[in-house]
Image (cartoon, rainbow, N blue to C red; front, top):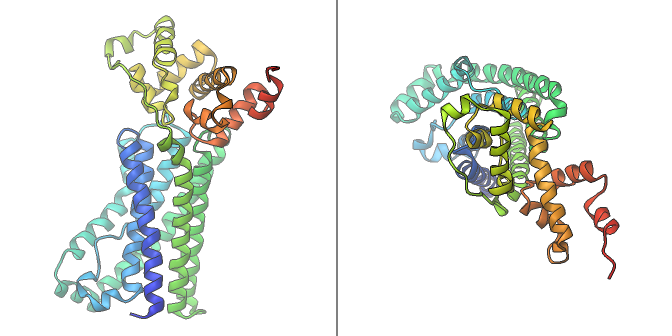
Length: 371
């Protein structure tokens, strides 16, 4: 192995391991109870594994160690549908995963099964399918399917984000959604350029292969860093209040406005559930013991707000209470915001200005107590 290949491999492995670690952390801390975070962690995971799978032959390790030839780690076809369903569940959280949605993962499952069977087989079988042209045909079919999938799901994500623009831009994960869409478009562009050169042969294949891989690697790094900045506040300031179990079907079916008001007061005023920065619609449905649709309807009917506005109103009141108590003299403003449950700086400043008409600093200057 050449020195350049060695450093290239170390760089690639570092980025892949970084992304892999973030994916595992997100799943452990959020994904086990949150469907949307589970999908995103799986998206990062399969992206990292697929790039690791491409790295082995690229740096020549497969030629030195034949056991590494065709590893069961290629999941490229699962990346576009996972990205789409993350966008879908983030922009329309009231939608569930239906049985017919499994058709989106038909080809990804077939791809995973093929590489699992072949990758776990003997070197003799791997050599046979290489010499008889089977593997070459599989690669061609994969590239065609990936081109179609990237194009189709990129367009689907664009239409989804466009139709729900006002909703997702106000969400805490708005920046991550935007970053994911950009990453999907970048992957599509890189893949199409690579396929175009494969037909025209304008650039030498070794140079293009390295350029293509590096581009995909930096797309993964970009998305991983965006993910880290999105989830980091949740990890540092995670406060999960005690929550009583309300999975009572009879109560959920007979829910009325008075019960809803009492339950909201218990959750938000007594247990202070809003202090949890990972609080979302799924978590609240479990707390109230109702469906997402009923939760949205009763919140709007009872308080005249959607659920995000209700949560943010309690968080802002908590921040204002801390300001009036003078806590900003001991702690910085952002620390107070995170302690109130805000998961990001941008969300806090946006909501604070919408509520008070001023920035936090401007509000403190206006309400500064004379000595």
